[in-house]
Length: 117
Image (cartoon, rainbow, N blue to C red):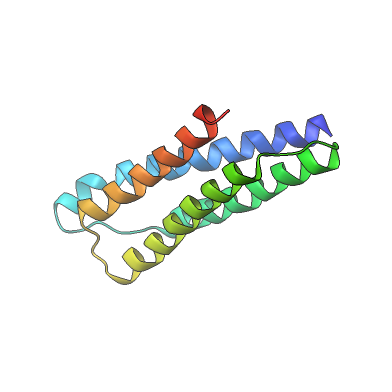
């Protein structure tokens, strides 16, 4: 089970990194009025959801008791990110403020994961 959990953690972190990198890469085009929400950004958001659910499953499978409040808050932040991505995708070109909101929510989600013990 530890191998599965390790693989899921790596994939989860890769999704976070890819999302933040893609978001930051779009700031320059957005400043010129050509910012977009690439499909890869949305795919990474779904990847976060799937790998996060898998990580929760590994905790339950190992007989542990995860912090359900923390999971709920992180899920709400991720749902906000996904909804924001779909809204921004429909209103292209994307403004830098929209990308900033996505980046801020991503950082909040990472901070919740790391700082909430």
